[in-house]
Length: 377
Ligand SMILES: *Cc1c(COP(=O)(O)O)cnc(C)c1O
Image (cartoon, rainbow, N blue to C red; front, side, top):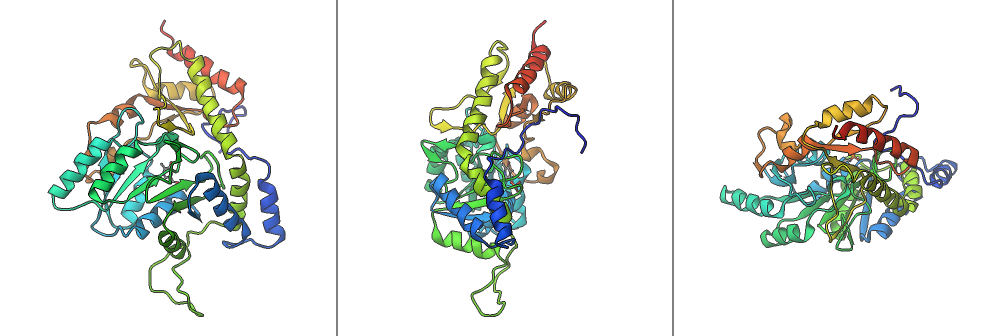
């Protein structure tokens, strides 16, 4: 695409500087492959930064979700309780394994899965004759979901929890890194996320067997034999050693990127506080958000689309909030439990430019135009 110069983007990659050293070493040593020292190094780094016991580096976050469902034994005919307020990549893997998503509404404090609605949904599914196989909870825009309550419900019914932390690397809940609270967690290193490998993902878990099984399925499920022996259906989901090199450089600056994204949020919030009807999502006491994207709810007399277009005319990129999955034509037949909160959020919300590399000048430009567009005249 051709962009006018000076465009303020929503979320762009931000290199730390050492990425090229790791990539260059891989090229020099001819580890231009889906095997090599950067992979083990990157997995080690992920464990170091998140306190995870095991990490498997993969070629997308979507692949990580797919493998997580596979190793949790979710298959045809199963039901998966899934946050409705999220990107479609969360739920597509449920379809890959032949299972059905059962969508669960958000609660207003974190915009993530409501523990009460979750509990009601499980009771209703069991009443209807089937116990759900998994709870897939998303930490949207970097904000941790109410994990204590969700884990309590999960434990009561004995259902494993899979955390989609694709947007939330570096976020914490009660001091724990998100992704480490459930049975399995996943991250994405897509180009627009807080750190990137250009494209990539990872699965983390404290369970050695699940990690080994994920690694096995990610490499075509090749059995330990001197010839090519296969007893299970596998995938080609491993991250490349080149991409892992970018990841190693990126993870060195992860904490800095979290700090910078949080500063972007704080800057908007402080400068726009006079617009009283503009609502920011505050951080509940137990939560530390990486503030991947700063989101706002607009005053009632404006639509997100009108503001988006007006900012677009100023060469500023914004984005509507995720359209809830239970409203997507793809999932029109899937069960849904809730009170419509995410539909309301979708009708009012906008994601603001949130890159860690934003300059004060760029932020001031966005703020100036938001003030102009939203000020009561
Ligand atoms: C980005 C994202 C994914 C998928 O990650 P990819 O690496 O792009 O496949 C999954 N879930 C959520 C919530 C995401 O934002």
